[in-house]
Image 1: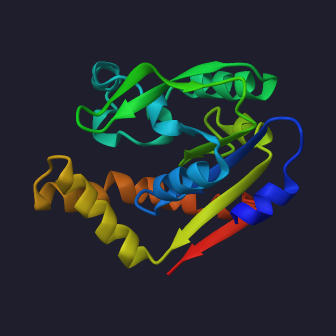
Image 2 (image 1 turned 60 degrees about the horizontal axis):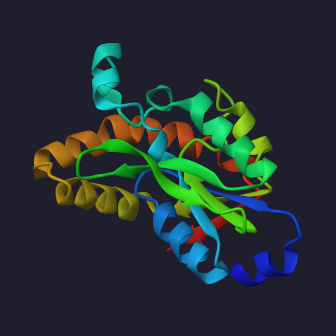
Amino acid sequence: MADYLTETATASRRILGIVGEPGAGKSTIAAALAAQLSAALLPMDGYHLPQAELVALGRRERMGAPDTFDVPGFIETLRELRAGGTVSAAGFDREIEEAVADSVLIPASAATVIVEGNYLLLDSGGWGEAAALLDETFFVDVDQGIRLSRLIDRHERFGKTPDEARAWSLGPDEANAELIRATAPRADHTIRLD
């Protein structure tokens, strides 16, 4: 994949999107690809709404759903990336489940930016402009049993009990996964993991 992207690179900044369901491995793939291409990395998770805001909106129990993100802020960051120059963006701290402002810096010299996230191909809820701001998109497809196992393990690593991790993975995360899975045909390419 990295060879293909190197061959198709142009002089202007390229923005590549890595999309997948929760637990599919998109963050791992995006980080490895960014390292191999000496590219900058922008995770969509930095655009989670703050916990207090999710509680006030009655959405905390659905954290990770499309309407639990700062969609306008994310789209604006993609526009800034498209325009070139240095871009400061939010990152995400899984330990506290909060976005951290200005923790991702994408320098003007970054010729390639890898953006990874769940809803890059969604065409509703304000997300529709995201795909148009990306040069190419890749959907990560993985066996559902493997994906679910990884997801449960991740939730446990970050503090949920085994029962809580399974309930969250099969509840809110699975509802989101179904929505994301439906966007797969919009991707330019599929990365199949076995």
